Length: 287
Image 1: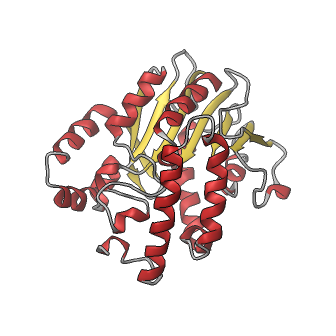
Image 2 (image 1 turned 180 degrees about the horizontal axis):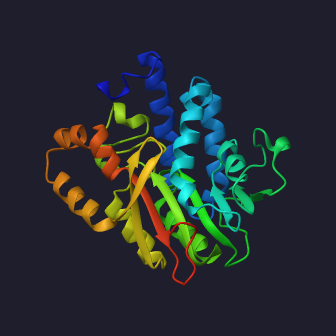
Image 3 (image 1 turned 60 degrees about the vertical axis):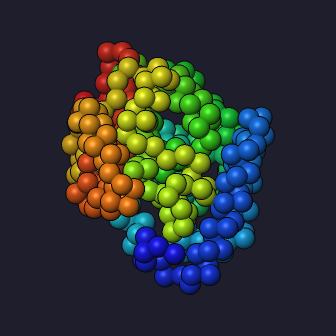
């Protein structure tokens, strides 16, 4: 095992167990035909947590949850005001969605499962939308801001492209999709990072800023921008300087590239916090 998992408190055998299970389940998704994947996403993750009860997502500390909430609110705050309709893809326990609800007109949480921790205490301007994994079942041109964190890399590449088209349809003119996903240049970022040089677990594809921006533009987004920074403080940049830096990084040997890309300073630059804007006159608050 490489030192990449040195902070994992589990035994080497437990980490290896998760790796083997994720490879098996990831390959199941990669090889599944398109019509089977929507139902398979949910069953695969249910099986993962059943077979790997020591999975970090099941044992994560409350302090970590507070930290994740704070930096995400810092990233989203320029887009939020009382006129905004917000939609979150893959909201998990909806902690962020509930917090955002205090600052916007309406919140939609889109997931494949109705079992969400804390849903009984949902704000009045919150609604859970079940999409079956196939698309966004919300009316066209009704959402000002869409957000996802650690979702894109879990989608089959074909499904990721389809989802972007659904997001674009749901957005109002000038609306934005803020997409946070790990940069493959410092990866793999799933459990296979302890064993492989490319993601082979349940990260079906990891992206660079360059690759994800191209995917957004092919889907029909008018433009993309990146947010650089960290610890809840971010600045909007054009994508071009980050793309140039990524190109330089890719010229380096793999081990050196990952070491440099994994430093805090470089992560603040190439961490994939991409914003795609739909064409039109209206822009989200603060833009």
